[in-house]
Image 1: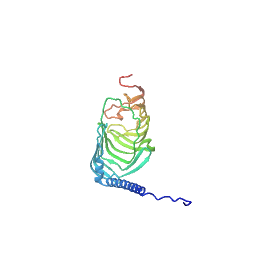
Image 2 (image 1 turned 90 degrees about the vertical axis):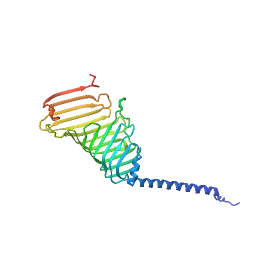
Image 3 (image 1 turned 60 degrees about the horizontal axis):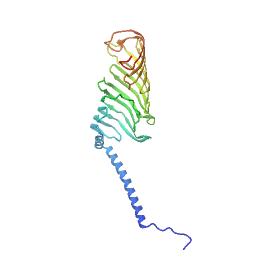
Length: 308
């Protein structure tokens, strides 16, 4: 017996087990790479993208051209009507310039999506009133994905039977500040006899869903009306939003100062209202309204039409 012991060589059975484990691991790696390559090929072709979109429940894409792994895309029509959802959305003439994916932009979001140059000829949103329960503010608005839309242009956006929003321009960031905030900026549009010159806003994604927004509006110059300009500001939790507005008519010195609290989830949406008028002419807002010169102030508090 010598002074040092030499280790015994591994047994044939142990060498065989290691060889099988190595082959299995290599096969799994190749299988994952093959799956990723196949997915990339699917996303990189028009036919593959069309097949993938057809698998999304409630989604219908008509004459889609392009891919979802970058570059331009367009579709004659996109319809989303998920059974049980309170919304039905139809988009005509959808297109965008570029699309980029990002993996895990922050904790809690499994992907990031950036779309530039999104355009649509017409967007229709229909809401379904299920009745019964009184709506409640959501506990959270967090999303499992970060979305950034830049240079958005919609020729027409209509919600239910309301007048359409025309020539909408904006940018949108869902999941800003690591998912804590949703932001909208550079918003402008025409609506009935109004023009939104510019607006921006943000809302927290966690309760109490604090909101902040401001914007400038002006009259659309309808025949027989006087031009006016207004500023709006809103702040507060979503359940009770404080709104401050001021309006001036051009060349007539008339003004309106308005403060109100909006409670969108209550039975009565206006909890408090104060207004102060100076030389206010109702003809500024409608060609069918009488010419007036209203002076004074008013304060209104109520919780419903049938309440004091």
